[in-house]
Length: 275
Image 1 (cartoon, helix red, strand yellow):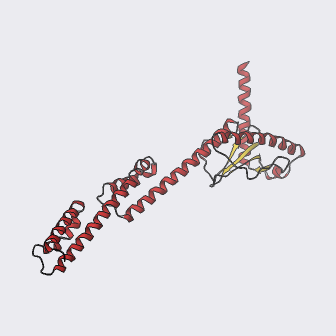
Image 2 (spheres, rainbow, N blue to C red):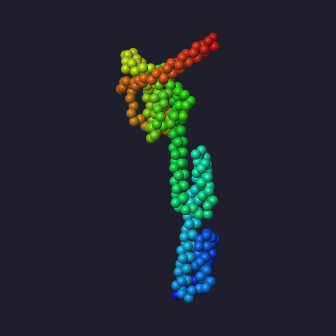
C-alpha cells in the first residue's frame, strides 16, 4: 500500500506545480490540502486527495499546452489582419486574446474561423480587383475604354460597356462570380424602331466590324495569357454565324454622339494648330 507520508509529499509537490501554471486552480484545492495538515487515519482519503490533485495538474498542463498552440496559430495572422481596412476590430480582439493567460478552445475556434473568413474574402476581392484591372487595362491599350471613372470600379457580376474604336459600336463585358468572362460586340441605337429595322448595308457593316473585333479579341486573349490569366472560350460566334446584337439605349446612343462630336472637334483643332 502507498506510504502516506510519501503520498502527501507528492500531493504537495503536485500542488506547487499547479500553482506555477495556474494559481487559481491551486487555490480551489486548498480545502483538500488543508486536510493534510491533520491527516485522516484513513489512507483511502489521502489517496483520493492525491488522485484529485493529479487530475487537476493534468488538466492545467493540457490547458497551458493548448493555449500555447492557439497563440502560435493566431500570432502570424495578426500582421495580416492589421493590414485589412475592415480588420481593426478583429486585430484588437486577437491582441487581447494573445495577452490572456489561457485561451479556451471555443473562443479560439470562433475567432480563428472569423479571421480565416475575412482573409479569404480579402484574397478573393484582391483577385477580383487584379482580374478586372488587367482586363480593362489591356482592352484600353487596344482602344477599348470604359465610359466613366466610376465604371473603372466595376466588379464581377456587373455588366459594363466599353467604348470601341468603331463609331456606334461598343463592347459589352461581364465577369461572373465564377470568373467566367462574357464579352461581345454590340451596336447601340437610340430607339426600338432602329433596333428592329436593320438595312442590308448596315448588316454588311456590322459583319465587317465584327471581323475586326474578332481579330482584336484574339489579341486580347493572347495578352491576358502572357500575364498568366487564361480565359477559356465556352462559346464563340463569328460574324457569319449570327447577326450582331443591337441594343436600344437612348442614353448610350446620345453619349456616343457626344463622344463622336468631341473626337471631330479635337481632330479639327489639331488640324488648325498644325497649319
